Length: 363
Ligand code: AMP
View 1 (cartoon, helix red, strand yellow):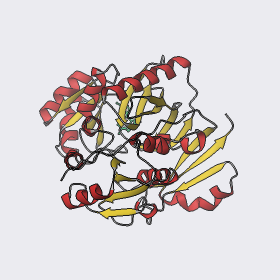
View 2 (tube, helix red, strand yellow):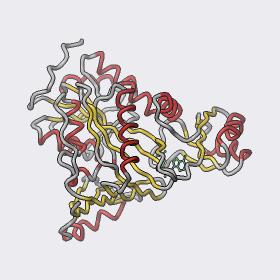
View 3 (tube, helix red, strand yellow):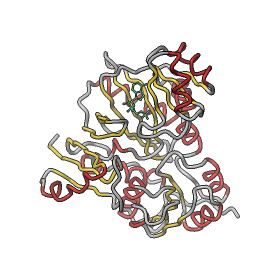
């Protein structure tokens, strides 16, 4: 049964639902608690990082109607910590009268790399050349369009560099297509970028926007290792990034925080690599380097509160602690410039994000 929509801005004491219970959900829950909200987590796994710091935890598949009903019974508004939440789950929550932010347009764009890049280009945000393929023959044909070498990516469900293959010569595209499992892909021209940057931006329910200073990001094996922020960029690059963010936020009628990954090309032109309709790993530096961090900003936006200031208060080097690296917690705790954030994951697997350290320096 549907119910009347919540009164916004949401008053402290209300409950915010979060689909997904990993580290992003945990840091969102901590920010929500600081503002006086209770949090209800829905995640298929019990006892996750977010559930352990939240008032309510529902263990259910994202598309389980009973689990979603239980979340709707608890939560006044719902958000999510990752973009592969099934569209049907968001639709069910909306039908039950619980607003979900960011909305379905953002999910649709972020779940499919072809839809995403088409959306970006249609809204004046440039990307590398790309072409879709749904068969080995089409993959070879797509190489003709984008040129070699090209990066083949599955259209859906890739993250941290998974579901990707470089293709050096057009005929090799057929084999790469099979290796990626025969699912629909896109082929992307090689970006040849100078640096990887990102911009974290936010849009409130009233359409107001805020952007954070850019971060410079370093990946290894497709996984983010390190961000430095505010990145040293010329004004023209910062302005371009802000223009891109404004177009994306307006184009998606967005509510919440978004992460936009950028390639800085020689000459300073920016291409968008991808958008993440959620708080973003390259925004973790804001926890210790900005007046209002990305997690609080997201909670403010979805709760219909005014957005907070995004000015930097420090220069931060953010290091992801992967796998066993988190065992160095005592060393980091002894460094006066380091702020340690651990996610409380029970098991360290190679490459698994266990925490991060923000090394804080004066601006
Ligand atoms: P993605 O999963 O799309 O975020 O890609 C992961 C990483 O692969 C990026 O952060 C880049 O380092 C690299 N990458 C992705 N797309 C391209 C491209 N078209 N050309 C060159 N490198 C890329």
